[in-house]
Image 1 (cartoon, one colour):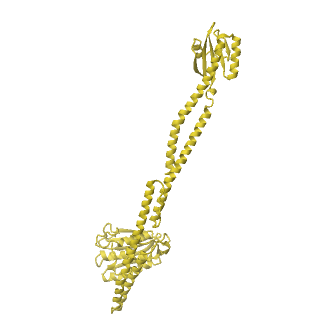
Image 2 (image 1 turned 90 degrees about the horizontal axis):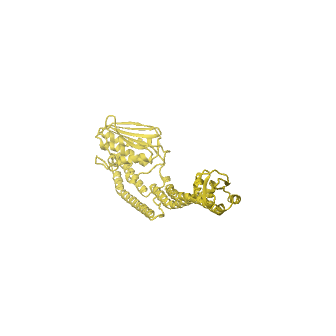
Image 3 (image 1 turned 90 degrees about the vertical axis):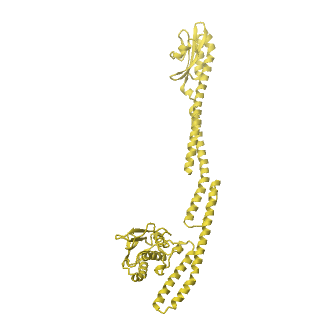
Length: 449
């Protein structure tokens, strides 16, 4: 913006100076020519009394003296054809003056002043003074240089003033941009100091108000999530007590483990709701091989109960990925939970985990009815579910520098590819607390797409 303003001012200044200085330069040249012509005319007029009354010797002496003083060629043409002074041929101007008409004309060497002298007994004499070109342009070059220097100085002053003016506009805009980027990077305490024109100060105030409002709303949301999560502890405690009262030790252990997993998830929600942005505090990586194997083993029990054939192709670990372990667990549970929620009992599915070209790819494929369009949109579901499951998986993939791909299987059904970047590719990112499902809940409690 500063460069454009400077260019605009420079263009306007140059155009203005050209419109002003070019006519002035032409006027200076005209004045110099007229000044030299007037001096030559005055010298010629001084010779008129001598030429009109004196003899040839006196005229010759006077002409030679005037030529020496003025430095210009002076010639006197007598009626009998005698030429006194500078020997120059008769020009058309001299011939015209011999008829009694004085004039000023252009010559090959500059300009000539011709004056007719009448009153002689033998006819009309003619005085001719030649004005050379260097006298006509004396001082013009210096005047033009002064005008050019003045124009350059005025342009530089204009550029300096434009740069100062542009700085008063650009600096507040740069500050607004910097604070906007800081807010986008979750630095919610960033504020801009209002400066510049009134319009920019108003924008700065609006941005500060927006940042304050976002900060207040975020704090309120965190507190509400933390309060809601804390309220879940009471039913969890009752669930654990009910599990301990069961007679079957296996059922008691299973329900107690599920309650413990739910309690860990609730604790994580509370911690995240009150957590302040500090990348050093985030988990560095997660072992995708271990997490996927654990979650597949968990869901395999339900698959056996519902008569689903499971095809497994899991790479041996470790396979570190750049996402937190609880986020990856939630994503895997969401993908596997969708198979059970949206396909009939007995529908086979396959789970494949492999490292490929610097990334880890988890593929979950089923032979069900397929997945509707827009299934990955948060809160959108054509099956009556919450619509959060695939969104959780998508953001987990993005946190690891990857992506979530949905496609139709070769034999029908759906195929979901969760691509995860390695742990060293970029720092892990965190998902919003409200999107994380419990790590060890029964399948029916998990959110689906």
